[in-house]
Image 1 (cartoon, one colour):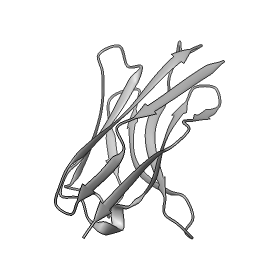
Image 2 (cartoon, one colour; image 1 turned 180 degrees about the vertical axis):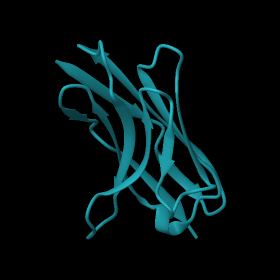
Image 3 (cartoon, helix red, strand yellow; image 1 turned 90 degrees about the vertical axis):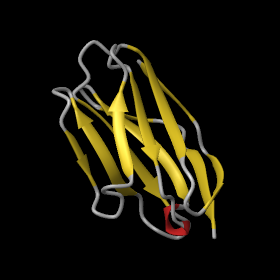
Image 4 (cartoon, one colour; image 1 turned 120 degrees about the horizontal axis):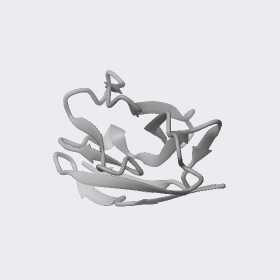
Length: 114
């Protein structure tokens, strides 16, 4: 079993920054990828960023240059540094970890005020 615990969401003004964290525990011997998704009210969940087991990173065009995904040395915690936040970044952010199947965090609310 795998547990994911997210933290770091909150309310911030446009142009501000937040850092999200997602700590994985349990049966996590071989994580294939760790990533972030978000879901705004009335919209479908969308992919934001991913870091693979080799350390490669990829970003959605909407966040490229503003968000940075990273992980700790133990490769069990993934971070999302979000800078230059915009009101359209407001959403519930979910981390997703892929091992032999996918696991999702509980979600953390990010609200960006204009």
